[in-house]
Image (tube, rainbow, N blue to C red):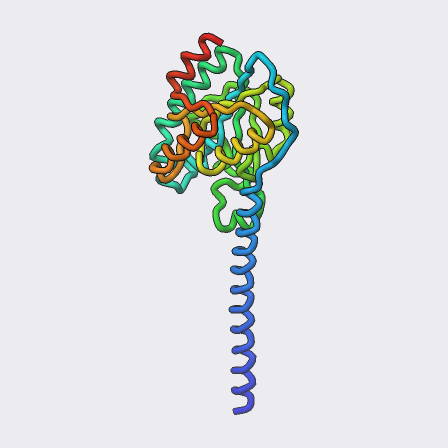
Length: 235
């Protein structure tokens, strides 16, 4: 009986240890996720630029990636809206390229291994982290980020300053997340802001008009892709 009891006690300790390790692993994942989420929401300050004439624009194409809108995506909302979004953005890219407006592609890449355990659709080096294959690539300006704010990668500042940019035109997603954070960081740097209303999306779709109206009240330019393309014909 004593041998059986001792063996039972050992098995019980092993089981308790396994459960404790499992719970600790889950807690570590949750805490890490919360820390990363908090870090994601940080908005960079940067050095304000001087606004001088003439207005010189750059087009930002944000987070249109295989892991969000493309084949590696698990998000039904973004995939269902992707065809129209990419068609419009490609039209804007064609026109911007024709008039020598710098085009900057921004993509989200996650290198945190614990976060990638939960969702590896945007893991660094994975197919999901690549730009959506339907997207037209008209420049070599492709930068990555691991936060919502694209200015978290200092290369973006460098590209804009090098090209004498003082106005940013926004397309892509998510309007309530990465696009919003990048706009706030751009405002900190004194850039003029333009959003192309039919070239940005957010979920749920019902949020979009409210966010655009908030930006309009902040003094940002909100125009359609058709209006934008007509306007750059006269730049």
